[in-house]
Amino acid sequence: MINRLLLKKIAVIGDIHCEDTILQKTVDFIKNENIENIFSTGDIVDGIGDINLTIDILKSYNIKTVLGNHDRWFLENKMRDLKNATQYKSINSNYLDYLKTLPKELDILTPNGVAILSHGIKDNDMNKIGEYDSNYTLTYNLELQKILKDRKYRYLIQGHSHNRMVKKIDHLTVLNAGSLTSENGAGFMTIDFIENTVQFYIFNDILDIISDKLIKL
Image (tube, rainbow, N blue to C red):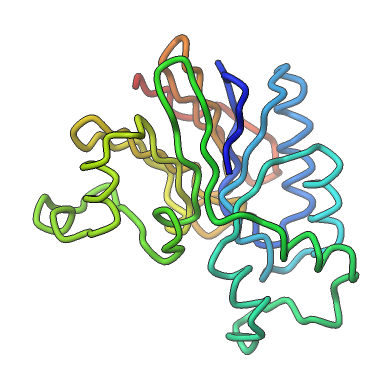
């Protein structure tokens, strides 16, 4: 799927995991910053919050979202014994239909080239790139190597690891917004493709949003 608008600035929300309260605070902040285009790396289900409220927020604000591995497991009725796993009986039928329509990847057109948004790497929702992955590890990451060889993409925006990151691999810049869970500190990021910067934001203990690292692309 391709987002055909040329986007100069976007916000990216990482893995959500039913954090409806933090999601709403995130969206309110982003909208107050006058950023209209919001994306998410998926993993909407499986968390302590309300799945129906979570999806309602995503739909209400037209947040473009890809399918995560937890969403796939939910639709396949697998791994439902996980801690805080979302159960079928807890989701409204129209929101179930919403999950079924989520794409695995989404192309985003920017002034600097094309970005691909996916939970992992393209249709492999379990493939993640870590900040400290060695050259050896990256060399044998087949999906990554295919993207590098094709040279279609300038940016890879992914989730899955829950770790905020900007990592350059040859011509490709890999970005990860982290997650909305408290596991590694809830947060999100904005990307300015004109200023070539990534601004990370985090939540403090009383769920106020504070600026974190500003990284030059």
